[in-house]
Image (cartoon, rainbow, N blue to C red; front, side, top):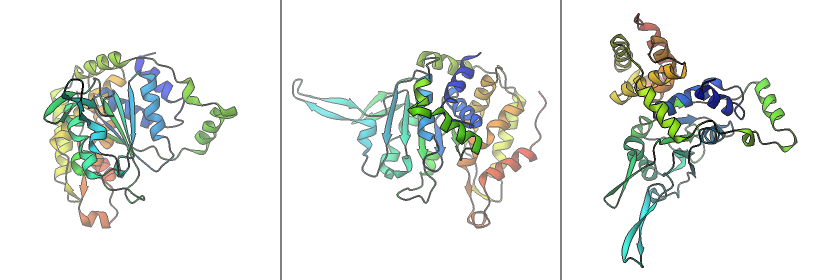
Length: 309
């Protein structure tokens, strides 16, 4: 059994019936990206992030975001040291391999923006000095649906930096019963999650993902799909060039997850919705009509002819 299969099986010990979500989140990690989990409270978003950190042996940090969390709590700050008569940098909460930004959309816009540099460049700048974050580095952010009490929409610039967005959804009746069975007699399934790799192994897998072959016709297919979002009458704004890069990286990571060293059109199609849908901005008319960006993505996949490679 491969390392990725072992990782998925360990996470499944605590997350019942969400194999697709687990696979997409792992694909995002393998692609070196950041994962946004959007759903109602209590469906297991935080639990999944913790399970990934445990089974992958990643240094894990978490911040429960509220309006009073400051940017310096995340990035760190300089503090006067009397002994050396100088300012010394105190690292913030983000200095971990896997950083869980819990309920990110409860934070102020200023605090949310503190994550932008870290997510894009893998470093933070404090008082004019740049500090590198540990590698590999992944942000797992959770957010409740817009309109929930005390929340605000994440800015477009932040949304675009999440490589993939997944939604847990409610479990089926059988999965919910299995969840209860696993917790009989006070047992915590998280205690049974074992480490199957470490940060160095993950970094090596990410390097292998980077080397996955993408045929020129697949690249053309990706560009065609992205351009269809920019010419859609229901969309005020289509996918950005960053989305093109993210879709390519996720396609390579999904191929790797499937045990291949080359990308197929199916790989692109499998990751298109979770990579692209959250980046699209509907026109006011489309919003009134109840159009969903997920449905637009599905139509785009249907309308584009997949290449033969």
